Image 1 (cartoon, rainbow, N blue to C red):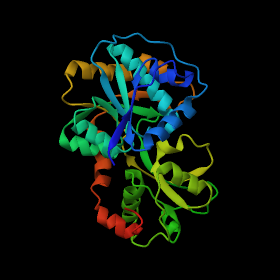
Image 2 (cartoon, helix red, strand yellow):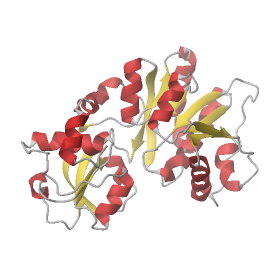
Image 3 (tube, rainbow, N blue to C red):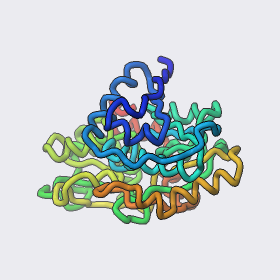
Image 4 (cartoon, rainbow, N blue to C red):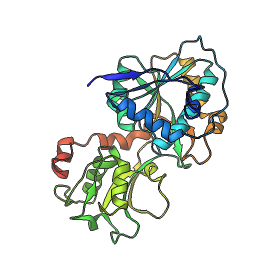
Length: 318
């Protein structure tokens, strides 16, 4: 299927869309019917919220194209990035066009085609485009004031499991994220355990769904980014392992963007105005500068042989 783009939405259409559209020209780049689904999710997430103050900017200026896919903290945090990007628009005094990508691969292709200037990327997508030399890090989101993200292996809080060895023969809910299958494979090897057949079942889904499975007793354990736990009440899960720093999903800028604009973007994201724009109750508590060294462990996980992972966790993990 090929990507399609929906037209920009007029800022007065609904009060919920005003949160983004009064300050940002909004588009959605997704695959097929996904455009309808994503927009409905966007409206239902923000319906009834009070619109933010109207910002001023030069509407005749060349737009800055910003991409977003999955956000730390889940879809409920889209409003946070909407407000932060609205502040970016004001600070740069130029329109900001936001593109939603259904997958990281879509977002990477947009960078390769020169269609994006800035994007919030998954760590795995960042590692891919970094190797091509087409992006650099502008800032990273801070979740619940934690300096960096880590991968964690979690079980239900009341589980009898106390260590990874206790999970032999149990059901492990796996995701394709670095914090999912790659971390689990690495962790078992670190404990001198053979990943091949260690778990009795390895159902595959995204992190949020896997956590729900564990909470409902449909799986015995999963591994996720710690930031994925931020939207869950305390006491639902218990961590039994935590990784070295994995690096937070970064906001990147294309390396061909002029240095003055790139610095203004970095200053806007990490400045006090952006912090003030973050809604009360958001799990995103700010943005900070970062460098590529923070992704050293992520590169270790990314280097694991995918064929070995598929053999270890079964053919259903692709």
